[in-house]
Image (cartoon, rainbow, N blue to C red; front, side, top):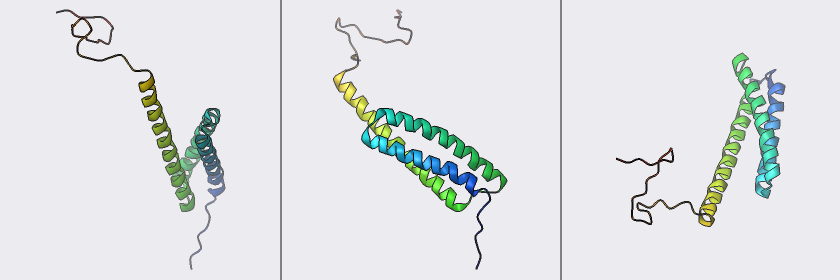
Length: 129
């Protein structure tokens, strides 16, 4: 029977991963409560914890490898992060649609009220041939 020995890097990897997991859970709670201030705070904390974890995991990968259990947890955390990003993207799209209904953009018809063709240019000026 082969015993699996823990990597000496495991404690250095465990702490940043725990911080990432905690921040993801807090962000998820804030998202479900729709608490904008908490979302912003926890997103900033998550960003910091992710940067630290990526640095530590990169160093570990270069110097001796990452234990499989920690690698699997990191992958799960990445999946949860992707799901939360998707939730935010859907919420933003829904908000954009609601705003478009409430505050319609300028008409983009082919002809203006005077019957002349409307053209938009990036510089705001008009061109004549």
